[in-house]
Image 1 (cartoon, rainbow, N blue to C red):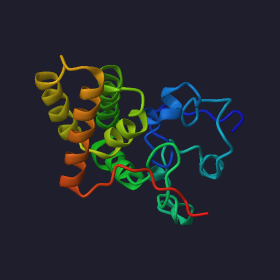
Image 2 (image 1 turned 90 degrees about the vertical axis):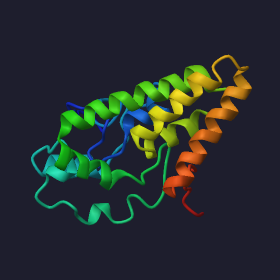
Image 3 (image 1 turned 45 degrees about the vertical axis):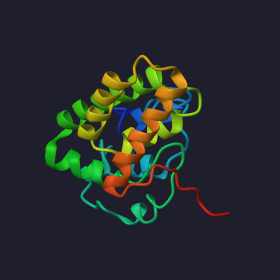
Image 4 (image 1 turned 180 degrees about the vertical axis):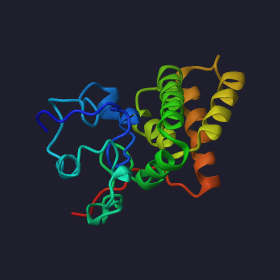
Length: 181
């Protein structure tokens, strides 16, 4: 959206984890409020109408009808934790959320640099987005101690297995949900 700017681009107005999105990581999207290149967004227009709130949870009308169905389907990144992310901004504060996002970006970058055999980018991004940071720290530690000297395909398989196991333990499906046609 033209001339739409926000201070913190890695977590969107609606709670989407832009910093963990494959489009953002690939340089195809500037993040929410990153200027030119953003798609037209009804929530960004709404923010302007409500005093340019930095996050929807700062709006007096939150949660509003714009959130109905917003987290039902995924795009390039899962939308399943939008409300959880916004609740975290409200309860823990933006600085704590920024620190966690920075750590998750570091963990995702490590996975992509050390365990991606060319087909895991979306799975890794989804896993890092949806899993708890403690789970991700444990996964990295296990991978560093047990598989760092393995060939890349075996490291990729080990990382995939550990992410799936952690997701299963929390009842999370590491698959983007497509909207039915």
